[in-house]
Amino acid sequence: MKSILFITFCFFSLAIQSQELTTKLHAKKALEADSFIGVDEFQSMYFIKDNILYKKTSKQLFSYSNVGLGKLSSVNIQNPFKVILFYAEFNAAIILDNNLNELTQKIDFTKETLFNNVAFVTGASQNNIWLYADDNKLHLYDYRNYTEVLQTQPTTFYDPDFLPKNIVSTYKKIWILSLNSVLEFNEYGIYTQSFDLKDVEQIFSFQKGFVFFKKRNFFYQETFSIIPIRLDYEDTIESIYINSAYIFIFDGKTVYQYQIIR
Image 1 (spheres, rainbow, N blue to C red):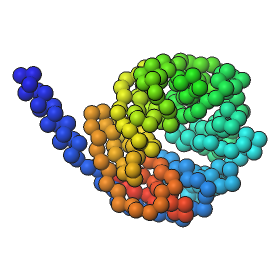
Image 2 (cartoon, helix red, strand yellow):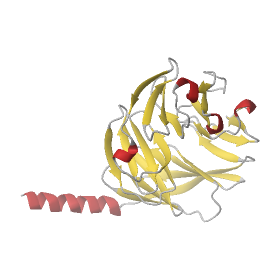
Image 3 (cartoon, helix red, strand yellow):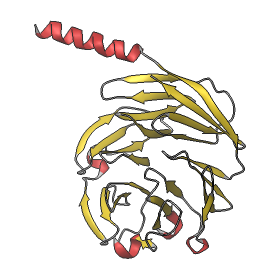
Image 4 (tube, rainbow, N blue to C red):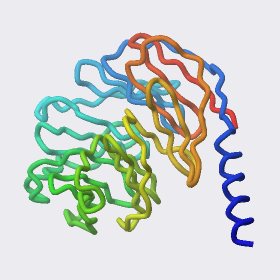
C-alpha cells in the first residue's frame, strides 16, 4: 500500500509540474523614469525619476523626495497604505501613506536597533516591518514603538554559505533569496522549508507561493511543484514587478502588462 501511495504521489507531482500557466498582453504604457517600481492593487503605478518617487493614479500624480537621505534604495508597495522606502546609504527607512505623505519620521536603524547595516526591508502586518540585518537574521520590528518583536536563527544556521540577495513577504510568509536557494519563514519567524533554486535573479509573492525569474523565464513555485509561466517577450528587461494577476516588464521606455492565466 505504501508503494502504491508513493507512486501515486510521484505521478501526481509530475502531472502538476507538466502544467503551464499562460499569459497574454493586456496593456502597454509609455513611461519616462529611471526605474519602474510596480503597480499596486488599485492599479496605481510607482516609479522613480531623479531620485523622486512618483505614484500615478488614473486622476492624480503624487511625489515624494528626501534629499537628506541620499539615493533611494528600494520601495515596497505591498500595502499601498504603508509604502516602505529604504535608504541603505543612511541605514534608514520612512513609511508613507497612500498619498505619499509621511506616516513616520526617519527610522534610523543604527540608532533604534543598533544594526549598523540593514541590507533589506520588506512589509509585515500591523505596525511591523521585516529587516534583514548584518547578523544574518530576520528581525520583525515595530516601527511605532521602536521595539523588536522577534528575531530568527541566522540564515547560516540552515546554510553555512548563505549569501542573501533579497527578501520578499506576504502577511503570512517571508522568503529570503540567495544564490543557491530560497528559505521560507512564517509570520512568527519560524523556518518552514527551503527550495533548492540556483541562480534565481528575482522572486515575487504570488497566490499560495512565489514566482521566480531565471534566465529570462518565469516559474511559479507552489508548495510541491514548479509550474512554468509562458510569456512571449524578447526585448530588453530593465525591471519586473508581479502582483496577484499580472506581470509587468519595463524596458526603459514602456511598461508591458501581461495577464497571468490559470
